[in-house]
Each structure stands twice: as structure tokens, then as C-alpha cells.
Image: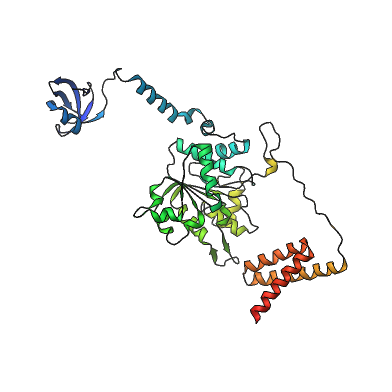
Length: 401
């Protein structure tokens, strides 16, 4: 018989006793096992002889007894190594850096280990300049939270063009394998909700909005949701007390914000010059704190805001103090215009200004964008602006006919 006998003081449970019992003695009796034990609740003495099959299938060990040193040393070494790695984050304050294929920069370490990780519940907008490595910061954050067993299910929603980049970065740098969900993979999973079956998911934001996709996503809950290019989650208020116009992307973010513990928004252009639009974006993180513009200013005026972080390229430096990005010098260079060019410039500028006023009054943002492009075409060349004006007036005449 190759069954390991329970050691003295081992706590067992099974149908042979009225409750958990503490083993006094255990000995092999031919093909059976004789167990002498005392009940933990009733203090009753038991003397039972069980077959090997009964002991293996019906008896459960609740607590180990006397320790012995007869185990396989290789398995013991493997168990202690697993425990050491499991607890490594408690001794290495930057454990994710040690186990990842990255050489983080000072501003990246500052964002993850000084602003994000100390938060008990992360609801944060990371808004550093383009090129700051926000994806690496998100990866370091994920790795730390996974190691601490704080998160298991992670969802990354981003523009379709960035989905492959996210998967590649997460695997090559952090050895975290994310599943890319597409319309085909979701539709092909008959009878299965792909959002529930996968714990690490990257998907296109616009895919998640499709009518046949959204219901499955709304059934899932997450430990961490990341929105890349979060400025696309737009909402607008027209007038001081006007109605709030929410895009479908914004409404999706509102729903997911209630179905996740941690929420990370990432964008290099958080503010579009509209304070109310920015407040509504921040309200995704905490609708009570950012319920008004006064609350917005109060929460962001703090030196260490628990909701928002933005660093410009000029402030980002290497560990030795060298600037990471070369300095930028922007100059406006003037040049003279011929009389006919000046007349055209003044006429187009007047046309654009008048059209923008009408577009604003009619709340037509598309017309405003088209007029802005006319100004750029004017600065490009006479040929470009005459082509644009000819096309626009030609379309206008056609619509009137």
C-alpha cells in the first residue's frame, strides 16, 4: 500500500466521524488503515478501520499534522522558489521592472510607483505628451497589480490601428498574453461569451459599440479597464445649463466604469479648450468629485492629484539629467503678399469667420472643421485654395439645383 499515513495531530473530516477529528495514531492494517482519533467538537474517541479506497476518496485532510522531512527535495525547492517569487514584490519596490524587458525612464517610474500604485482604487487620467511611453507605464502597472493578485481580468480598448501594437508590447516586454477579440472571433464563438471566457483582452473601441457585440460586453466585469486615446470619449454641454450630448463611446465608458475596480484613461490631448468637455471626461473617473467645474478645479489644483497627471516633453529627462527630447523652437515667419493675394486672403478669411459663426449657431461642428481646412489650404498655395473653393461652390450650386 503506497498511501501516506496521516501524521499525529492531523485534522481529518469524512462521513466516518460526526465532525472534524484530530488523529492520535494511524497504522497500516493489511490493505486497510486503522485510524484512532478524537473529535474536535464533541471530544469523542473514534477507532475506525478504512479501506484504501475509502481513505483516498472520502477522507479530506483539513490541517496537516507533525512535519516530516521525507518529501521530494526537488519539489520542496520548487515550492519555496514559487513562494519567493510570489512575495518578491514585498521586498523589491520595482518588481515589475526586474521581470520585464524594459528600461524605464524616470518619468515612467514616477507615474507608476509614485502616482498610480499607492492608490487603493485607481481611477486615473494619464495625459503625458506624445512619445512619453504611456503604453509602457500601463504595462508596468498591470504587471505589478497582477503580481500582487489585485487584478486578474484586464480589458484594453483602443483604436483598431493600435490593437496589434498593444498585444505585441504586452507580450514582448511584459510576457502577458492578451487575446485580440474581433467581430469574427466573437461571432464564431457560438454559445460562448468571449468577453467572459478571456481574462486578458484587447479590442477595438468601435468594435465594442456594435449592436451585436455590446450586450456580451455589458455582461462582463473587470478588475482593470484601460482606454487608450481617451479623448475620443467625448461629451458636450451646450450652454451653462443645456442638455449634455454624449457620444456612444462616452456612454460605453460610463457603463464600463461601473463594472471595473480600476480604470485608467490615457491620452496626450486631454483638454480641447472646453472646460465642460474636460469635466465630463474626468467624471468617468468619479462623477461625484467632478460633478461641477468647481469640483474639477479643486481636484486638479492639488500638487499630487489622485486623478490626473500630465508632463510635457520639456520636463522629461534621463537619469543623468539630459533632456529626452530635443528642444523645440517655434517661430512665425512672415512674408509679403502681392495685392491680388492679399485681396484673396482677406476675402477667404471673412468667408471663414462668417461661416464659423453660422456653424456655431447651428451647432454644426462638421461645417466648422471644413472651414478651418480652407484656411490651411489658403496658407498652402493659390492653387490649393482655388481648387477647394471651386469644389465647394460647385457642390453648393448642385445642391441648389
